[in-house]
Structures are given as structure tokens and as C-alpha cells.
Image (cartoon, rainbow, N blue to C red; front, side, top):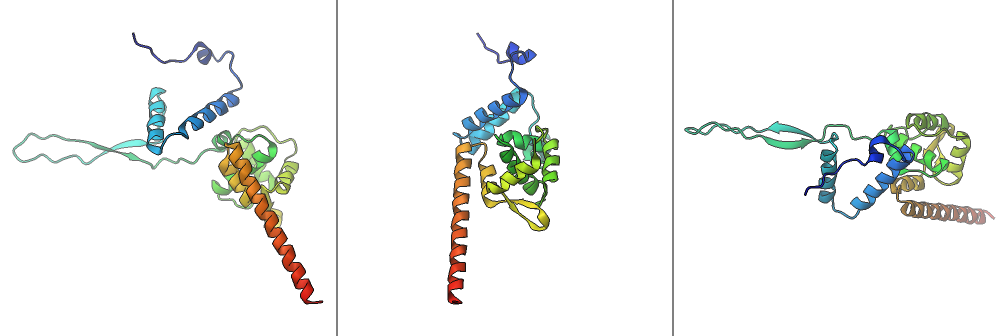
Length: 216
């Protein structure tokens, strides 16, 4: 007796389903949690198996090469060797990136957008309208007050000032976004970043006091 896997009735007609984005986030979280326990080769096999099962297009393309030449006195036989090609662009879209990181607040979303525009658009210095435009491209909810969200991202240590009134991703903010969607790791990354910032500020103030004392 064989058992075939297939979509349930709810999956087929979409009834009783949660919001599509919520379902995607839950599925992604479950997948990442499961894959975290495996090594790279095991992860690769699982991902490829899922793609094959659902008939999805893999980012790996297969090409033929090296056809053997016939040996003298024997029938000609050709053997094709297959190798993966990684020429396809794997850069995530803004929507995919935000889905992966799953920010829980406007400040976190601002930070994720800042990371994306810095590392995937090569724009290290930006203004709030740049992030708002990227937010729209990512099909995210509109910010109630984007300028205020950016301001809180600065005071929270996720962003910092840049030339010409622009903003840039802080070192702590970068580590925070990198750690997402693991919220505990992200929280710890921000705590470490803030401690370093406070320590650096304390050292600077101490040097200023010492310098002032030498002139008395």
C-alpha cells in the first residue's frame, strides 16, 4: 500500500488559511530551524529534494560537457558529464529579504531596509525617502511616520549619522540584521554593540578630561 504526498483540501482551496505572509514566515522559520541541525551537504540534498518534489525551478542549472571520443576499433559511445552552473543571480529581492528577516517593528524594518540598500544596492549613505521607496518595492505595510521611525532607529543604535544629513547602518545595526530571524542572537548582537559604543564614549570623555587637566 503506497502513500502519496499531496496538498490537503485546505492547501488546495486556500480555505481556513492565515494571512499569506504569516504562513510564509512560519514555514520559513520551521525550515530554517530544521536545516540548522544539519551540515551543508545534508541541507543541499534536502533543498534539492523539495524543489524536485514541488516541481520548482532550482537556482542550479545543469549543462553538458566533455563528450568522449570514440576509441579506434570500437563503437562510438558518448558520455555526458554534468556540472552545476552558478551563473544565475541569487540576490534576494527586497520582499524576499524582509520575509527572511521577519522584522517585528517599524524600527527593525527600517534597519533591515538600511542593510539591504547598503549591501545589495551599494548605497551606504541614504535618506529616509530612499528607505520608504525600498519599503514600497518590498510590498511592506506603509510606515505611519517614516521620519520618526528613522529617528528612533538612530537613537536605538541601529543607524548612525552620515555626511550631508544622510544616515548609514551602524556596526551594531548590521550585526542585528545579520542575526535575524534568530531574535535572541539579534538581541545579543545589539547589546554587545551598545556596550562597545558606551565604552568608546567613556574613553573619549576620559581623554577630554585628561587633556583639559594638562592645560590648567
